[in-house]
Image (cartoon, rainbow over the protein chains, first blue to last red):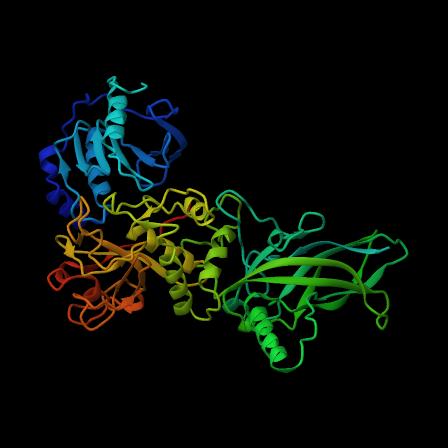
Length: 163
Length: 411
Protein backbone atom coordinates (compact mmCIF):
# COMPACT_ATOMS: atom_id res chain seq x y z
CA UNK A 1 0.00 0.00 0.00
CA UNK A 2 1.23 3.46 -0.91
CA UNK A 3 2.39 5.63 2.02
CA UNK A 4 -0.12 8.41 1.43
CA UNK A 5 -2.96 5.90 1.24
CA UNK A 6 -1.82 4.29 4.48
CA UNK A 7 -1.63 7.66 6.22
CA UNK A 8 -5.10 8.54 4.97
CA UNK A 9 -6.51 5.31 6.38
CA UNK A 10 -4.65 5.71 9.68
CA UNK A 11 -6.12 9.15 10.13
CA UNK A 12 -9.60 8.12 9.07
CA UNK A 13 -9.67 5.16 11.46
CA UNK A 14 -7.94 7.02 14.30
CA UNK A 15 -5.03 4.61 14.43
CA UNK A 16 -3.28 6.43 17.25
CA UNK A 17 -6.24 5.78 19.57
CA UNK A 18 -5.90 1.99 19.46
CA UNK A 19 -2.50 1.13 18.00
CA UNK A 20 -0.32 -1.05 20.19
CA UNK A 21 -3.03 -1.78 22.75
CA UNK A 22 -4.04 -5.38 23.43
CA UNK A 23 -5.43 -7.53 26.22
CA UNK A 24 -3.09 -10.27 25.05
CA UNK A 25 0.41 -10.16 26.57
CA UNK A 26 2.98 -8.99 24.03
CA UNK A 27 4.92 -12.25 24.28
CA UNK A 28 1.90 -14.43 23.50
CA UNK A 29 2.10 -14.99 19.76
CA UNK A 30 -0.28 -17.32 17.91
CA UNK A 31 1.24 -19.11 14.92
CA UNK A 32 0.31 -22.08 12.70
CA UNK A 33 -3.36 -21.84 13.62
CA UNK A 34 -5.34 -24.89 12.55
CA UNK A 35 -9.11 -25.32 12.43
CA UNK A 36 -10.27 -28.88 13.06
CA UNK A 37 -13.97 -28.30 12.44
CA UNK A 38 -15.07 -28.44 16.09
CA UNK A 39 -14.60 -24.75 16.73
CA UNK A 40 -17.99 -23.41 15.69
CA UNK A 41 -21.05 -25.16 17.10
CA UNK A 42 -23.80 -25.39 14.49
CA UNK A 43 -21.36 -25.06 11.58
CA UNK A 44 -19.59 -27.62 9.43
CA UNK A 45 -16.07 -26.81 8.26
CA UNK A 46 -16.21 -27.05 4.47
CA UNK A 47 -12.67 -26.10 3.57
CA UNK A 48 -9.58 -24.66 5.16
CA UNK A 49 -6.45 -23.49 3.44
CA UNK A 50 -3.22 -21.90 4.59
CA UNK A 51 -1.68 -19.35 2.23
CA UNK A 52 1.76 -17.83 2.46
CA UNK A 53 2.49 -15.18 -0.15
CA UNK A 54 5.29 -12.62 -0.27
CA UNK A 55 4.70 -9.31 1.55
CA UNK A 56 1.60 -10.66 3.32
CA UNK A 57 1.25 -12.30 6.72
CA UNK A 58 0.43 -16.02 6.54
CA UNK A 59 -3.32 -16.46 6.28
CA UNK A 60 -5.61 -19.32 7.22
CA UNK A 61 -8.88 -19.14 5.28
CA UNK A 62 -11.80 -21.33 6.28
CA UNK A 63 -15.36 -21.70 5.03
CA UNK A 64 -18.09 -22.74 7.48
CA UNK A 65 -21.46 -24.06 6.38
CA UNK A 66 -24.30 -23.28 8.76
CA UNK A 67 -25.97 -26.66 9.37
CA UNK A 68 -29.54 -26.78 8.08
CA UNK A 69 -29.09 -23.70 5.91
CA UNK A 70 -27.32 -22.81 2.68
CA UNK A 71 -25.44 -20.04 4.51
CA UNK A 72 -21.63 -20.08 4.41
CA UNK A 73 -19.36 -17.89 6.52
CA UNK A 74 -15.76 -17.18 5.58
CA UNK A 75 -13.12 -16.65 8.24
CA UNK A 76 -9.65 -15.33 7.38
CA UNK A 77 -7.02 -15.30 10.11
CA UNK A 78 -3.84 -13.36 9.33
CA UNK A 79 -0.89 -14.33 11.51
CA UNK A 80 1.25 -11.24 12.07
CA UNK A 81 4.60 -11.22 13.82
CA UNK A 82 3.53 -9.00 16.73
CA UNK A 83 0.72 -6.86 18.11
CA UNK A 84 2.18 -3.80 16.39
CA UNK A 85 2.43 -5.69 13.08
CA UNK A 86 -1.17 -6.83 13.46
CA UNK A 87 -2.38 -3.29 13.96
CA UNK A 88 -0.36 -2.10 10.97
CA UNK A 89 -1.87 -4.91 8.90
CA UNK A 90 -5.34 -4.00 10.15
CA UNK A 91 -4.89 -0.69 8.34
CA UNK A 92 -3.93 -2.58 5.17
CA UNK A 93 -7.02 -4.72 5.58
CA UNK A 94 -9.25 -1.70 5.97
CA UNK A 95 -7.86 -0.54 2.65
CA UNK A 96 -9.43 -3.59 0.99
CA UNK A 97 -12.96 -2.37 1.75
CA UNK A 98 -14.42 -0.36 -1.07
CA UNK A 99 -17.12 1.16 1.13
CA UNK A 100 -16.25 4.48 2.68
CA UNK A 101 -18.73 3.68 5.45
CA UNK A 102 -16.84 0.91 7.26
CA UNK A 103 -16.05 2.24 10.71
CA UNK A 104 -14.82 1.23 14.13
CA UNK A 105 -17.13 -0.70 16.45
CA UNK A 106 -16.98 -0.27 20.20
CA UNK A 107 -20.28 -2.05 20.85
CA UNK A 108 -19.01 -5.59 20.16
CA UNK A 109 -17.47 -8.24 22.38
CA UNK A 110 -14.61 -9.34 20.18
CA UNK A 111 -11.15 -8.06 19.39
CA UNK A 112 -8.77 -5.57 20.92
CA UNK A 113 -10.09 -3.27 18.23
CA UNK A 114 -12.89 -4.04 15.77
CA UNK A 115 -14.42 -2.62 12.60
CA UNK A 116 -17.35 -3.49 10.37
CA UNK A 117 -21.06 -4.10 10.56
CA UNK A 118 -23.33 -6.96 11.60
CA UNK A 119 -22.47 -8.60 8.26
CA UNK A 120 -18.70 -8.25 8.37
CA UNK A 121 -16.30 -8.20 11.30
CA UNK A 122 -12.67 -7.17 10.99
CA UNK A 123 -10.74 -7.18 14.23
CA UNK A 124 -7.31 -7.58 15.77
CA UNK A 125 -6.60 -9.73 18.80
CA UNK A 126 -3.01 -10.01 19.90
CA UNK A 127 -0.88 -10.70 16.85
CA UNK A 128 -3.84 -11.83 14.76
CA UNK A 129 -6.06 -9.93 12.35
CA UNK A 130 -9.34 -11.75 11.81
CA UNK A 131 -11.94 -11.14 9.13
CA UNK A 132 -15.36 -12.81 9.40
CA UNK A 133 -17.80 -12.25 6.54
CA UNK A 134 -20.58 -13.78 4.54
CA UNK A 135 -19.77 -15.91 1.50
CA UNK A 136 -23.45 -16.39 0.61
CA UNK A 137 -26.56 -14.25 1.12
CA UNK A 138 -27.94 -14.68 4.63
CA UNK A 139 -29.78 -12.63 7.18
CA UNK A 140 -27.88 -13.71 10.28
CA UNK A 141 -25.21 -11.53 11.90
CA UNK A 142 -21.61 -12.73 11.89
CA UNK A 143 -21.04 -11.39 15.40
CA UNK A 144 -21.53 -14.79 17.09
CA UNK A 145 -18.93 -16.38 14.87
CA UNK A 146 -16.52 -13.49 15.47
CA UNK A 147 -16.99 -13.80 19.24
CA UNK A 148 -16.36 -17.54 19.16
CA UNK A 149 -13.22 -17.24 17.06
CA UNK A 150 -12.00 -14.46 19.31
CA UNK A 151 -12.65 -16.59 22.40
CA UNK A 152 -10.60 -19.40 20.87
CA UNK A 153 -7.72 -17.05 20.20
CA UNK A 154 -7.56 -15.77 23.76
CA UNK A 155 -8.24 -19.23 25.20
CA UNK A 156 -11.48 -18.14 26.80
CA UNK A 157 -14.40 -20.64 26.90
CA UNK A 158 -17.59 -19.20 25.54
CA UNK A 159 -21.15 -20.28 26.32
CA UNK A 160 -22.58 -22.31 23.44
CA UNK A 161 -19.17 -22.92 21.92
CA UNK A 162 -17.93 -26.40 21.22
CA UNK A 163 -14.45 -25.38 22.35
CA UNK B 1 -4.57 -54.24 -40.73
CA UNK B 2 -3.02 -50.82 -40.24
CA UNK B 3 0.71 -51.00 -40.55
CA UNK B 4 1.50 -47.43 -39.56
CA UNK B 5 0.49 -45.87 -36.28
CA UNK B 6 0.56 -42.37 -34.92
CA UNK B 7 2.37 -42.37 -31.58
CA UNK B 8 2.45 -38.70 -30.59
CA UNK B 9 2.07 -35.11 -31.80
CA UNK B 10 3.92 -32.17 -30.25
CA UNK B 11 2.50 -28.71 -30.93
CA UNK B 12 4.73 -26.81 -28.50
CA UNK B 13 7.98 -28.43 -29.57
CA UNK B 14 10.17 -25.38 -29.04
CA UNK B 15 9.58 -23.79 -25.64
CA UNK B 16 11.90 -20.89 -26.47
CA UNK B 17 9.72 -19.38 -29.22
CA UNK B 18 6.12 -19.11 -30.35
CA UNK B 19 6.80 -18.04 -33.94
CA UNK B 20 6.67 -21.49 -35.53
CA UNK B 21 4.87 -23.52 -32.91
CA UNK B 22 2.47 -23.32 -29.96
CA UNK B 23 3.09 -21.38 -26.76
CA UNK B 24 4.04 -22.71 -23.33
CA UNK B 25 1.02 -23.70 -21.23
CA UNK B 26 -0.18 -25.44 -18.12
CA UNK B 27 -3.72 -26.54 -17.24
CA UNK B 28 -4.09 -24.80 -13.89
CA UNK B 29 -2.16 -24.19 -10.66
CA UNK B 30 -1.54 -27.88 -10.07
CA UNK B 31 -1.85 -29.69 -13.41
CA UNK B 32 0.76 -29.65 -16.13
CA UNK B 33 0.29 -30.09 -19.88
CA UNK B 34 2.89 -32.55 -21.05
CA UNK B 35 4.47 -32.31 -24.50
CA UNK B 36 3.80 -34.08 -26.84
CA UNK B 37 0.25 -32.95 -26.26
CA UNK B 38 -1.34 -35.82 -28.22
CA UNK B 39 -0.42 -39.39 -27.30
CA UNK B 40 -1.84 -42.59 -28.68
CA UNK B 41 -4.23 -44.25 -26.24
CA UNK B 42 -4.19 -41.24 -23.93
CA UNK B 43 -5.68 -38.41 -25.99
CA UNK B 44 -9.21 -39.33 -26.96
CA UNK B 45 -11.14 -36.05 -26.88
CA UNK B 46 -10.09 -32.64 -28.24
CA UNK B 47 -9.52 -31.35 -24.69
CA UNK B 48 -7.04 -34.19 -24.10
CA UNK B 49 -4.74 -32.55 -26.64
CA UNK B 50 -4.60 -28.81 -26.08
CA UNK B 51 -2.38 -26.16 -27.61
CA UNK B 52 -2.49 -22.39 -28.02
CA UNK B 53 -1.09 -20.16 -30.74
CA UNK B 54 -0.33 -16.43 -30.57
CA UNK B 55 -1.45 -14.96 -33.90
CA UNK B 56 0.89 -11.98 -33.76
CA UNK B 57 3.89 -14.24 -33.15
CA UNK B 58 3.02 -16.72 -35.86
CA UNK B 59 2.18 -14.14 -38.54
CA UNK B 60 2.82 -15.68 -41.93
CA UNK B 61 5.47 -18.07 -40.67
CA UNK B 62 5.36 -21.76 -41.46
CA UNK B 63 4.12 -23.61 -38.39
CA UNK B 64 5.48 -27.03 -37.66
CA UNK B 65 4.58 -30.06 -35.55
CA UNK B 66 6.81 -32.82 -34.26
CA UNK B 67 5.21 -36.18 -34.90
CA UNK B 68 6.27 -39.68 -33.91
CA UNK B 69 5.07 -42.69 -35.89
CA UNK B 70 5.63 -46.40 -35.72
CA UNK B 71 5.34 -49.17 -38.28
CA UNK B 72 4.49 -52.78 -37.46
CA UNK B 73 5.75 -54.19 -40.76
CA UNK B 74 9.48 -54.74 -40.73
CA UNK B 75 9.50 -54.75 -44.53
CA UNK B 76 8.43 -51.11 -44.67
CA UNK B 77 11.28 -48.66 -44.27
CA UNK B 78 9.56 -45.50 -45.47
CA UNK B 79 6.12 -44.07 -46.21
CA UNK B 80 4.48 -40.82 -47.19
CA UNK B 81 2.35 -39.41 -44.38
CA UNK B 82 -0.08 -36.48 -44.17
CA UNK B 83 -3.20 -35.39 -42.30
CA UNK B 84 -6.30 -33.85 -43.85
CA UNK B 85 -9.26 -32.13 -42.26
CA UNK B 86 -11.58 -34.85 -41.01
CA UNK B 87 -14.64 -32.64 -41.07
CA UNK B 88 -16.52 -33.00 -44.32
CA UNK B 89 -19.78 -31.15 -44.60
CA UNK B 90 -22.59 -33.01 -46.38
CA UNK B 91 -23.83 -31.25 -49.51
CA UNK B 92 -26.37 -28.57 -48.58
CA UNK B 93 -29.92 -28.58 -49.90
CA UNK B 94 -30.55 -26.41 -52.92
CA UNK B 95 -32.12 -22.96 -52.83
CA UNK B 96 -32.21 -20.36 -50.06
CA UNK B 97 -32.05 -22.95 -47.31
CA UNK B 98 -28.87 -24.37 -48.78
CA UNK B 99 -27.32 -20.92 -49.02
CA UNK B 100 -28.29 -20.19 -45.40
CA UNK B 101 -26.87 -23.51 -44.22
CA UNK B 102 -23.60 -22.79 -46.01
CA UNK B 103 -23.41 -19.40 -44.31
CA UNK B 104 -24.07 -20.88 -40.86
CA UNK B 105 -21.45 -23.56 -41.46
CA UNK B 106 -18.95 -20.97 -42.62
CA UNK B 107 -19.50 -18.85 -39.49
CA UNK B 108 -19.34 -21.89 -37.22
CA UNK B 109 -16.12 -23.04 -38.85
CA UNK B 110 -14.58 -19.56 -38.59
CA UNK B 111 -15.38 -19.34 -34.87
CA UNK B 112 -14.86 -22.91 -33.73
CA UNK B 113 -13.51 -24.97 -36.64
CA UNK B 114 -10.10 -26.07 -37.75
CA UNK B 115 -7.59 -23.20 -37.85
CA UNK B 116 -4.51 -25.33 -38.34
CA UNK B 117 -5.42 -26.47 -41.84
CA UNK B 118 -3.74 -29.69 -42.87
CA UNK B 119 -0.48 -31.48 -42.24
CA UNK B 120 1.64 -31.36 -45.38
CA UNK B 121 2.67 -34.72 -46.80
CA UNK B 122 6.25 -35.83 -46.36
CA UNK B 123 8.25 -38.98 -46.53
CA UNK B 124 8.99 -40.65 -43.22
CA UNK B 125 11.66 -43.26 -42.63
CA UNK B 126 11.39 -46.03 -40.07
CA UNK B 127 14.26 -47.55 -38.18
CA UNK B 128 13.37 -50.67 -36.21
CA UNK B 129 9.73 -49.68 -36.74
CA UNK B 130 10.08 -46.20 -35.25
CA UNK B 131 10.21 -42.85 -37.01
CA UNK B 132 11.52 -40.86 -34.07
CA UNK B 133 10.36 -37.26 -33.81
CA UNK B 134 9.71 -35.92 -37.33
CA UNK B 135 8.94 -32.33 -38.25
CA UNK B 136 5.78 -31.75 -40.30
CA UNK B 137 4.67 -28.44 -41.79
CA UNK B 138 1.12 -27.17 -41.66
CA UNK B 139 -0.51 -25.98 -44.87
CA UNK B 140 -3.76 -24.15 -45.68
CA UNK B 141 -3.44 -22.75 -42.18
CA UNK B 142 -5.82 -19.98 -41.09
CA UNK B 143 -3.94 -18.85 -37.99
CA UNK B 144 -2.62 -15.66 -39.58
CA UNK B 145 -6.14 -14.24 -39.88
CA UNK B 146 -7.84 -16.12 -37.07
CA UNK B 147 -9.78 -14.44 -34.30
CA UNK B 148 -9.77 -15.26 -30.60
CA UNK B 149 -11.48 -18.52 -29.84
CA UNK B 150 -11.28 -22.14 -28.81
CA UNK B 151 -11.19 -24.18 -32.00
CA UNK B 152 -11.41 -27.88 -32.66
CA UNK B 153 -9.11 -29.47 -35.18
CA UNK B 154 -9.88 -33.01 -36.34
CA UNK B 155 -7.38 -34.67 -38.56
CA UNK B 156 -7.54 -37.80 -40.64
CA UNK B 157 -4.00 -39.21 -40.83
CA UNK B 158 -3.13 -41.00 -44.04
CA UNK B 159 -0.18 -42.82 -45.53
CA UNK B 160 0.90 -44.26 -48.83
CA UNK B 161 3.90 -46.36 -49.60
CA UNK B 162 4.56 -44.94 -53.05
CA UNK B 163 4.30 -41.34 -54.16
CA UNK B 164 1.41 -41.91 -56.57
CA UNK B 165 -0.46 -44.62 -54.66
CA UNK B 166 -3.85 -43.81 -53.17
CA UNK B 167 -3.85 -42.47 -49.63
CA UNK B 168 -4.91 -44.87 -46.86
CA UNK B 169 -6.47 -43.64 -43.62
CA UNK B 170 -4.72 -45.00 -40.55
CA UNK B 171 -5.67 -42.77 -37.60
CA UNK B 172 -7.78 -39.81 -36.47
CA UNK B 173 -6.68 -37.20 -33.97
CA UNK B 174 -8.64 -34.40 -32.32
CA UNK B 175 -7.23 -31.25 -30.74
CA UNK B 176 -8.42 -28.19 -28.85
CA UNK B 177 -6.61 -25.20 -30.29
CA UNK B 178 -6.80 -21.84 -28.55
CA UNK B 179 -6.18 -18.79 -30.73
CA UNK B 180 -4.75 -15.80 -28.85
CA UNK B 181 -3.97 -12.35 -30.20
CA UNK B 182 -0.43 -12.39 -28.88
CA UNK B 183 1.68 -13.95 -26.16
CA UNK B 184 -0.02 -13.68 -22.77
CA UNK B 185 1.28 -10.78 -20.71
CA UNK B 186 2.00 -10.46 -17.00
CA UNK B 187 1.07 -12.01 -14.63
CA UNK B 188 1.27 -14.80 -17.16
CA UNK B 189 4.76 -15.85 -18.13
CA UNK B 190 6.41 -17.93 -20.84
CA UNK B 191 9.58 -18.62 -18.86
CA UNK B 192 10.90 -20.46 -17.05
CA UNK B 193 9.09 -23.34 -18.71
CA UNK B 194 9.04 -25.52 -15.62
CA UNK B 195 6.31 -27.40 -13.81
CA UNK B 196 7.05 -25.26 -10.76
CA UNK B 197 6.14 -22.08 -12.64
CA UNK B 198 2.45 -21.57 -11.84
CA UNK B 199 2.36 -18.32 -13.86
CA UNK B 200 2.52 -20.14 -17.19
CA UNK B 201 -0.83 -19.51 -18.93
CA UNK B 202 -3.61 -21.78 -17.67
CA UNK B 203 -5.82 -23.42 -20.26
CA UNK B 204 -8.56 -23.55 -17.60
CA UNK B 205 -8.56 -19.74 -17.63
CA UNK B 206 -7.99 -19.48 -21.38
CA UNK B 207 -11.18 -21.44 -22.00
CA UNK B 208 -13.30 -18.73 -20.38
CA UNK B 209 -11.28 -15.83 -21.77
CA UNK B 210 -11.68 -17.20 -25.32
CA UNK B 211 -15.41 -17.65 -24.85
CA UNK B 212 -15.85 -14.09 -23.59
CA UNK B 213 -13.67 -12.57 -26.32
CA UNK B 214 -14.83 -14.90 -29.08
CA UNK B 215 -14.16 -13.45 -32.53
CA UNK B 216 -11.95 -10.58 -31.32
CA UNK B 217 -9.13 -9.57 -33.62
CA UNK B 218 -7.79 -6.61 -31.62
CA UNK B 219 -6.77 -6.11 -27.97
CA UNK B 220 -9.54 -3.53 -27.49
CA UNK B 221 -12.20 -5.93 -28.69
CA UNK B 222 -10.77 -8.79 -26.67
CA UNK B 223 -10.59 -6.76 -23.46
CA UNK B 224 -14.09 -5.42 -24.10
CA UNK B 225 -15.42 -8.94 -24.54
CA UNK B 226 -13.79 -10.10 -21.32
CA UNK B 227 -15.17 -7.06 -19.46
CA UNK B 228 -18.65 -7.85 -20.70
CA UNK B 229 -18.22 -11.53 -19.85
CA UNK B 230 -17.20 -10.72 -16.30
CA UNK B 231 -20.01 -8.23 -15.77
CA UNK B 232 -22.59 -10.68 -17.05
CA UNK B 233 -21.55 -13.23 -14.44
CA UNK B 234 -23.89 -11.30 -12.18
CA UNK B 235 -26.19 -12.14 -10.52
CA UNK B 236 -26.11 -15.90 -11.19
CA UNK B 237 -22.42 -16.53 -10.55
CA UNK B 238 -21.23 -13.49 -8.58
CA UNK B 239 -22.73 -10.37 -7.11
CA UNK B 240 -21.37 -7.25 -5.51
CA UNK B 241 -20.39 -7.59 -1.84
CA UNK B 242 -22.78 -5.15 -0.21
CA UNK B 243 -23.00 -7.11 3.06
CA UNK B 244 -19.23 -7.19 3.46
CA UNK B 245 -18.57 -3.53 2.74
CA UNK B 246 -17.14 -4.35 -0.67
CA UNK B 247 -14.20 -6.45 0.48
CA UNK B 248 -12.02 -8.53 -1.82
CA UNK B 249 -12.94 -12.21 -1.92
CA UNK B 250 -10.74 -13.40 -4.78
CA UNK B 251 -7.93 -10.84 -5.04
CA UNK B 252 -6.73 -10.23 -1.48
CA UNK B 253 -2.95 -10.79 -1.46
CA UNK B 254 -2.98 -12.32 -4.96
CA UNK B 255 -5.54 -13.64 -7.40
CA UNK B 256 -7.21 -16.84 -6.19
CA UNK B 257 -7.79 -17.85 -9.79
CA UNK B 258 -8.32 -21.47 -8.77
CA UNK B 259 -11.32 -20.48 -6.67
CA UNK B 260 -12.65 -18.19 -9.40
CA UNK B 261 -12.44 -20.92 -12.03
CA UNK B 262 -14.17 -23.29 -9.63
CA UNK B 263 -16.95 -20.72 -9.27
CA UNK B 264 -17.18 -20.33 -13.06
CA UNK B 265 -17.46 -24.09 -13.44
CA UNK B 266 -20.40 -24.24 -11.04
CA UNK B 267 -18.49 -24.90 -7.82
CA UNK B 268 -18.55 -22.80 -4.66
CA UNK B 269 -15.19 -21.08 -5.17
CA UNK B 270 -14.84 -18.39 -2.55
CA UNK B 271 -18.55 -17.67 -2.60
CA UNK B 272 -20.87 -15.37 -4.49
CA UNK B 273 -19.52 -12.00 -3.41
CA UNK B 274 -16.98 -9.88 -5.28
CA UNK B 275 -15.76 -6.31 -5.15
CA UNK B 276 -14.11 -3.96 -7.62
CA UNK B 277 -10.60 -5.30 -7.00
CA UNK B 278 -11.83 -8.80 -7.77
CA UNK B 279 -13.50 -7.66 -10.99
CA UNK B 280 -10.49 -5.59 -12.07
CA UNK B 281 -8.34 -8.66 -11.48
CA UNK B 282 -10.70 -10.96 -13.40
CA UNK B 283 -10.83 -8.59 -16.36
CA UNK B 284 -7.14 -7.80 -16.62
CA UNK B 285 -5.86 -11.32 -15.94
CA UNK B 286 -8.27 -12.98 -18.37
CA UNK B 287 -7.71 -10.29 -21.03
CA UNK B 288 -3.95 -10.56 -20.60
CA UNK B 289 -4.00 -14.29 -21.21
CA UNK B 290 -5.26 -13.41 -24.71
CA UNK B 291 -2.38 -10.98 -25.30
CA UNK B 292 -3.91 -7.76 -23.98
CA UNK B 293 -1.86 -5.58 -21.65
CA UNK B 294 -3.96 -4.29 -18.74
CA UNK B 295 -3.18 -3.39 -15.14
CA UNK B 296 -5.24 -3.42 -11.99
CA UNK B 297 -5.14 0.13 -10.66
CA UNK B 298 -7.04 2.27 -8.19
CA UNK B 299 -8.64 5.68 -7.97
CA UNK B 300 -9.15 7.50 -4.67
CA UNK B 301 -8.57 10.82 -2.92
CA UNK B 302 -8.10 12.38 0.49
CA UNK B 303 -11.51 11.01 1.49
CA UNK B 304 -14.17 8.85 -0.12
CA UNK B 305 -15.95 10.03 -3.23
CA UNK B 306 -19.71 10.19 -3.74
CA UNK B 307 -21.27 7.96 -6.38
CA UNK B 308 -23.71 8.56 -9.18
CA UNK B 309 -26.46 6.00 -9.69
CA UNK B 310 -25.03 2.82 -11.24
CA UNK B 311 -25.77 -0.83 -11.83
CA UNK B 312 -23.35 -2.78 -9.67
CA UNK B 313 -22.50 -6.30 -10.82
CA UNK B 314 -25.48 -8.53 -10.02
CA UNK B 315 -27.85 -5.61 -9.45
CA UNK B 316 -30.72 -4.40 -11.61
CA UNK B 317 -31.43 -1.26 -9.56
CA UNK B 318 -30.01 2.13 -10.48
CA UNK B 319 -28.57 3.55 -7.27
CA UNK B 320 -25.26 4.52 -5.70
CA UNK B 321 -23.53 1.24 -4.92
CA UNK B 322 -25.26 -0.64 -2.03
CA UNK B 323 -27.47 2.37 -1.28
CA UNK B 324 -29.11 2.06 2.14
CA UNK B 325 -27.09 -0.99 3.23
CA UNK B 326 -25.39 -0.95 6.66
CA UNK B 327 -21.78 0.19 6.35
CA UNK B 328 -22.40 2.14 3.17
CA UNK B 329 -22.66 5.88 2.61
CA UNK B 330 -23.27 6.20 -1.15
CA UNK B 331 -19.53 6.52 -1.64
CA UNK B 332 -16.41 4.53 -2.39
CA UNK B 333 -13.22 4.82 -0.34
CA UNK B 334 -11.48 3.69 -3.52
CA UNK B 335 -12.37 1.98 -6.75
CA UNK B 336 -10.26 -0.37 -8.84
CA UNK B 337 -10.50 -1.14 -12.55
CA UNK B 338 -8.55 -2.72 -15.36
CA UNK B 339 -6.50 0.15 -16.80
CA UNK B 340 -4.18 0.66 -19.74
CA UNK B 341 -0.62 1.95 -19.92
CA UNK B 342 0.40 4.26 -17.05
CA UNK B 343 -3.08 4.20 -15.41
CA UNK B 344 -3.40 7.98 -15.49
CA UNK B 345 -6.34 10.27 -16.32
CA UNK B 346 -5.51 10.08 -20.01
CA UNK B 347 -5.43 6.28 -20.08
CA UNK B 348 -8.36 3.98 -20.70
CA UNK B 349 -10.33 1.84 -18.31
CA UNK B 350 -12.33 -1.38 -18.48
CA UNK B 351 -14.70 -1.85 -15.55
CA UNK B 352 -16.37 -5.25 -15.23
CA UNK B 353 -17.83 -4.37 -11.84
CA UNK B 354 -20.50 -1.84 -12.74
CA UNK B 355 -22.40 -0.04 -15.45
CA UNK B 356 -22.49 3.75 -15.36
CA UNK B 357 -25.03 6.15 -16.80
CA UNK B 358 -23.86 6.87 -20.33
CA UNK B 359 -26.12 9.80 -21.13
CA UNK B 360 -25.42 13.54 -20.99
CA UNK B 361 -26.24 13.80 -17.26
CA UNK B 362 -25.05 10.78 -15.30
CA UNK B 363 -26.15 12.22 -11.96
CA UNK B 364 -29.91 11.77 -12.48
CA UNK B 365 -32.49 9.60 -14.22
CA UNK B 366 -33.15 8.67 -16.94
CA UNK B 367 -30.21 6.33 -17.13
CA UNK B 368 -28.56 4.81 -20.19
CA UNK B 369 -26.56 1.77 -19.11
CA UNK B 370 -22.96 1.90 -20.26
CA UNK B 371 -20.45 -0.81 -19.43
CA UNK B 372 -17.10 1.02 -19.30
CA UNK B 373 -14.91 -0.49 -21.98
CA UNK B 374 -11.98 1.38 -23.49
CA UNK B 375 -13.15 4.67 -21.96
CA UNK B 376 -10.70 7.42 -21.05
CA UNK B 377 -10.63 7.97 -17.28
CA UNK B 378 -10.66 11.73 -17.86
CA UNK B 379 -10.80 14.87 -15.76
CA UNK B 380 -13.79 16.53 -14.07
CA UNK B 381 -16.04 18.03 -16.72
CA UNK B 382 -14.87 15.72 -19.53
CA UNK B 383 -17.99 13.53 -19.24
CA UNK B 384 -15.80 10.45 -19.43
CA UNK B 385 -15.37 7.65 -16.87
CA UNK B 386 -14.63 9.81 -13.83
CA UNK B 387 -17.68 12.04 -14.34
CA UNK B 388 -19.96 9.09 -14.91
CA UNK B 389 -18.82 7.26 -11.77
CA UNK B 390 -18.47 10.07 -9.23
CA UNK B 391 -20.80 12.88 -8.23
CA UNK B 392 -19.71 16.43 -9.10
CA UNK B 393 -18.55 16.95 -5.51
CA UNK B 394 -16.92 13.54 -5.43
CA UNK B 395 -14.88 13.92 -8.61
CA UNK B 396 -11.99 15.88 -7.04
CA UNK B 397 -11.53 12.92 -4.67
CA UNK B 398 -11.67 10.36 -7.44
CA UNK B 399 -8.12 10.61 -8.76
CA UNK B 400 -6.00 8.02 -10.54
CA UNK B 401 -3.48 6.36 -8.22
CA UNK B 402 -0.96 5.00 -10.70
CA UNK B 403 1.36 4.00 -7.83
CA UNK B 404 -1.21 1.35 -6.97
CA UNK B 405 -1.04 -0.35 -10.37
CA UNK B 406 -0.25 -4.03 -10.19
CA UNK B 407 -0.86 -7.43 -11.74
CA UNK B 408 -1.69 -9.89 -9.02
CA UNK B 409 -0.03 -13.28 -9.33
CA UNK B 410 -2.37 -16.20 -9.95
CA UNK B 411 -2.68 -18.97 -7.38
